[in-house]
Image (tube, rainbow, N blue to C red):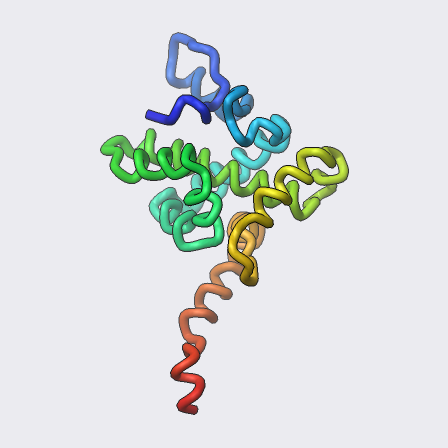
Length: 176
């Protein structure tokens, strides 16, 4: 199960259908989370973006999308996220694993939207933008590929992946 410091805010109810409906509409981080500064409305919209994308394309690539992108830096630097990722990777229940991976994707997308001031979210929540920017700046200095682009511009990220796959490595380029 998830680490107690990162949870989705749900009230207990009688049916899974009610929980699923609530999950899609009410998303927040508990008071112990490092990510509690993320505005609830942004987290809800980010979650909907992630779930809509994977409802169309499937969840099978989500763990690879997270791990083989700059989102990995965020996951590795936050013990809570790393534990959720590890637990989800070992889970035998696909729904639970998909929910966990979607939680991580939601966090990363929300942080990037704030830091980049996408659609005015950073201007609307300047303190949250500063915190998100500080979290993202603390990672190794290298050209950053934004994880949110995989959701907002999926064909672009596919083209980037294909282009990087066929680009010559440093040793190959020296031989030419």
